[in-house]
Image 1 (spheres, rainbow over the protein chains, first blue to last red):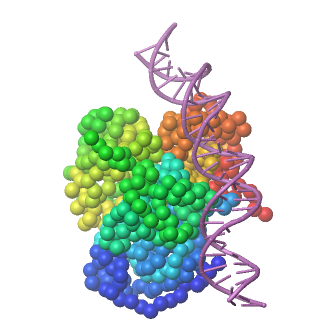
Image 2: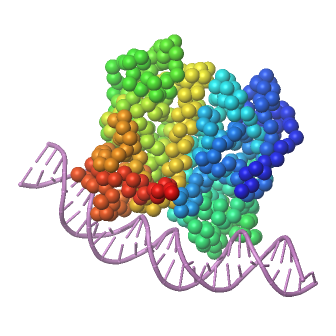
Length: 249
Length: 249
DNA sequence: CGCAGAATTGATACATCTCAAGCTGGGTGG
DNA sequence: CCACCCAGCTTGAGATGTATCAATTCTGCG
């Protein structure tokens, strides 16, 4: 509905960019950076904005500079599955294809560094620095997608919730240059509905499982969006990934 | 169990290779091809062989020359999810990583063109022809993984089976340079167990849903491994992907 | 012929969904 | 300032889909 709402932004130099060393441009030389500088512009979105609809033309390729966006697919009758998350430095769009394969929606305020499609495609094709970085990033995404397939196909609702919390706890700890520890508190940036879409569950099941984990003191809720983990190990056990919850003797 | 069973093979010249124009080497020059020739050897496996276990060292990178292999992840208690299929021309292994992220198992007789890891990584790094092709292939795999996430997270057992049959029917038709049509007959190369692992179901549910589709004449079974589709449109409807089962007027 | 792996079918248990009713907290307008 | 409202969330009761456990049947093959 708000597809046209992308606002243009002041220009920023690549050298000063907060995602300079993690985005697609991570390995670029100064020379390449200035070429990128000349084919880029910034776009901003507010929460709820659809950046592009599945099947529609995506007129640019871009890097997430700030904010969070979701990738999701929808079945004819409205069932929705989130298939990816775009975080700062993640790449949006597929070189060599004109249309989007998924709905891309801003979950928070989002700023994107948008490159002219043709120009960037030529640069990717010619410059190993760009191509190799994009390959790395795509391989990482493929790994997470496959890890998520295991969760979707084989984990119980409780394990799904616990797994999501483990991931969010880790990400939050990493954000503070820390590792997950007992007593860690982290925010849920997303609604129960977004969690449900992510985990292949309904809102009600998400809510019930969170309540169950709280009743059993695996987690603690200050409010509906703030999770405390008294014992990280206990949460890990609930996620079901691995045998190493038990002591090996 | 049979990890060491890879047999060496006669050498084949890249120019004569059946996957020459679809594999990672698709865009290579003759010069590059002969360099590849010098760092490759063939390995063969029989059905059931584990090519590599998750977490173990994968000592090579390779292209599937013939046969089918499965990629799967396993939870501590044995629940298994297939996360990918390797078909002829698909690439095995991840440049820049020493260990396998999944179990790779030969589903049929398999022949792999195995490249020396270090040497191929250097070539990928330096040659856009290899890097760009691998990027394309990885992006395709990411798309299929995400499509599969929608199936795993949101489709019913019946829709999962129908979707799998649609994919297999399409692949089989394509193999015969044809498109899927009414009356199409195609073989199921895999066991019910493999289907279950692929679809996130149990063997019994797979069997029951296949029986239901047969009862309702959506499909027809000559034997347990041979499917006939009287009306392709009807099968498509059952897969649930899209609204265009109905006529638009 | 008979065996072993694969597949089907049945009965039942259980997890998750569905439908429906309340709850909560923050924002808005009277 | 209060009453109301609404989106987000929680909880309950019952329906439904899929898993589990168990018993046959089928199929290919030595």
